[in-house]
Image (cartoon, rainbow, N blue to C red; front, top):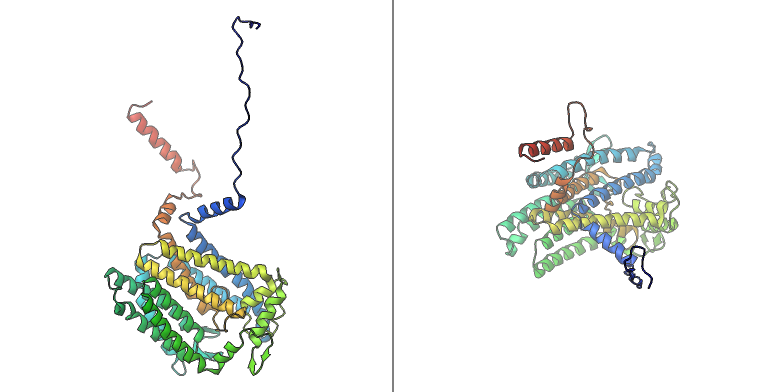
Length: 450
């Protein structure tokens, strides 16, 4: 073996071995699911979903109210933007209520429960006073405020039942009284029946169904025994069956389920059938904003109860699925807030609000799709109507406040630093980072460090 120039023996290089096998690539679907799961488990996810989802629903609702109400306004010899301007005003006021509710502490929400309940009961009783309440579409549930403005007190009854019922159950839970059935039911169920009775005096079956769902949601969250829950549900079902069979109008709505012709025998199913026509003509991506045909006098209540049908016609299946996904995300975020808190009031109130919005959305969409009877309830945050929008936005503010109040969310918000502030080196002010650096240098010199 020849020597090297330095006289040292040459170094034998090791033969290259086979390259180490690369780890198998992660399944893209599983990786996407894992990333989505990690993102959902972040402390502020529910806060952002509730805030962003509700704002998107409200803004899209304003757009669709403007599109769906133009023809109705012109037929009434009103400006085409008449209903849109009223809805926009209600949305601005509702945004203020949402912000106020999201910044209120929990103890203030609990303090407002009894005043809101008392105000709702008084207003709902005034509706039945001759000369005070007025009837709209056969339901005596409105109080005129002057001009073209009216208020529907039964919408505020939903918020009152959520807040008062949550506060009542939370206080009884703290005293360990919910194990007794009489404390579980009294006075929650009698107060709920009082609200239901005042609503049914005006003939509003749809709002009564929503209040019943809120009541059952509160009882379920409070841990009502199965036999007690089934017993209350049976009583409500019997009362509902009596109320439905005693009204020819409600029976006609039941007979319109699955109808494909406007005149199905002796029953007039015009609204239900034309809602299906609107959805069917929309296709995948719709005919475009403002291009609906059914809103030209064919579809009654196009901007209120049946605005989802106009959305399907103008935005297609993509638009309706987007609205459905936003409501699903909002409901799931509300369930997360209710499930992760240790405060019983927050759990009951968040669960009640989530039940209210989810059930009302399901009833409205189910009626438009022909899967449920037409109950005459608006799509939350989406349909035209300030009386429905204001309490709903206040309830969304409650969910936002509860989402911010989670311990992990509070810690995450406390760690957030403002992105925008005074510029570094501005006259009369040294930025926080520079001040911290100077303080560390001063402490190092005083301790003898170099």
